[in-house]
Structure formats: C-alpha cells, structure tokens
Length: 291
Ligand code: GDP
Ligand code: ZN
Image (cartoon, rainbow, N blue to C red; front, side, top):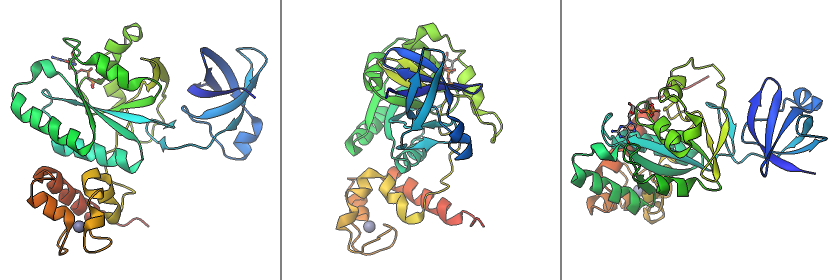
C-alpha cells in the first residue's frame, strides 16, 4: 500500500505527498466515527486511482503534535531570534527551549538580523554558551543573505516549524529560502495574533530538501503541562549533571551536595541559565491548580 505524508488539509481533502507526487485524498468514513482526525504532518497509507481521487486509509502513530498550529510529527523547531529589533533575550530563548525540549522536538537556534549586531562580543559569548550546551546555533541575515545556506542545510530531510516573536524575521527567512512563495513579511506574524481557539490553517511547504510549516509554532508560551520535577530535564546541561546530585529527585534549589549548583558556582553552567530555571520554577509553583 502506498504511503505518504499529509502536507495540507483543506475543505475535506487531504493532500498527500508521496515522493514528488501530491495526491488529493478524502478521509475514510470510519475516521469520523472513531474520532480520528488526520493532521497535517501525519504519515498515512492511502490508495488512489489517480491524483485527484485518493483515500487516506490509515494514520500512523505520531511522534508528537502541536495544537497551534495543528501539525504532527515535527522533527525540529527553528527558534528565530533577532539580535536587534527586537533585542536578543536569553530569558525568552530559554522559555522557547524549555517548551520545545518538553515536546521532544529538536531545536535549532537561528539568530537573525546579524547585519544589525552592535555588541558582537556579548553576542559571541551567548552563542558559545548555547553551543557548549549542545545546541545548534546559526547566525543569519536576510538582508545580506549571510548564513542562509547554513540554515538550509539544517532543513534538509526534516519537517520544521519556525517559532519566535513577531518581527524577528521569520517570513523574511522563508522568503529568502523560497522566493517563489512571496509570503507577505507580516502575514506569518499576524496569524499569531488571532483568537486563541481559532484552528489555524497550516501547510507544509517543500523547502531546502525538507518541509517547513508556513505558520509559526509555539504561540502560547506558558508552561502548562510541565511539572516542577520535569523542568530540569528541559535544561540539558542540568539533566546531564543531576545524576551526580546527592538526592534523587533533586530540584537543584536548596538541597545539599547538588551537582547543578556546584556547576553554577564553578561557572560551568552560566548564571543566567540557572536564574531562568529558578524563575520558571516559581512560575510553575504559582500556576493555579486546574479542576
Ligand atoms: P516576522 O514577523 O518574524 O515574520 O518578521 P518579518 O520577516 O516580517 O521581519 C520583520 C522586519 O524585520 C521587516 O521589516 C524586515 O524587513 C526586517 N528584517 C527581517 N530580516 C532582517 C535582516 O536580516 N536584517 C535587517 N536589517 N532587517 C530584517
Ligand atoms: Zn541538584
């Protein structure tokens, strides 16, 4: 049975990408009865007489899914952060990183507007810090086209979603990679402002040998669903050391013989990363219980 990946869902049709072909399919009648909603990004089995009359027969198990935009099986999130306008913020970056780590999605940090960078020294230190943790950091400018080929290299053979504040240059990047798309530079960002419960349309577009969601992900930045004892697992440099803490389940707060706090004291973990951890701990503690 042929297999493919849903790249678009519109007016009751699913568009299944199989190699170079896109087959227009309907869902199987039993999906509705069984409450199965195929999502963009789903790997499916289908049958088709021709390119316009196919049927999606089975939906394969998902490795993850996002609610906004509704898309499944994301391999990586490209975290887009401008170095200026708006200014680079490590606390916002760490917030995005935690959310992405908690979903088991691989992050790629993409700095944009490098042509506007003023304080290169500080920036280089941050870049070195995040690389030491193990994160991929690419430095780009859509203005000068610097670094774009590096970003493209990371998109190959993966399904990616772009994330980041509005105005950081997400649409400019996508336009630079796929000039034929001619996305309005504020079109992507404006979709972030829509009502919370609006199900947004999302489409996966072939770009640089991979697929990229045309709508940015992670519009909600709260830690809903992340528990106190799960937070340090979302900081890889803490997760690596927590097995050396004296107490199992150490939250790295006031516990004695805490390997994480020792690493902070020795400068192996940057202070600001640990401070953001504490800030997020407080936020999770203050979260109102839901009934
Ligand atoms: P989005 O909201 O994240 O999609 O951001 P846009 O792509 O719409 O870009 C926001 C603004 O930043 C626009 O005015 C762009 O022209 C500008 N911009 C985007 N990338 C760059 C860049 O690399 N360098 C400079 N100087 N400006 C950029
Ligand atoms: Zn500890």
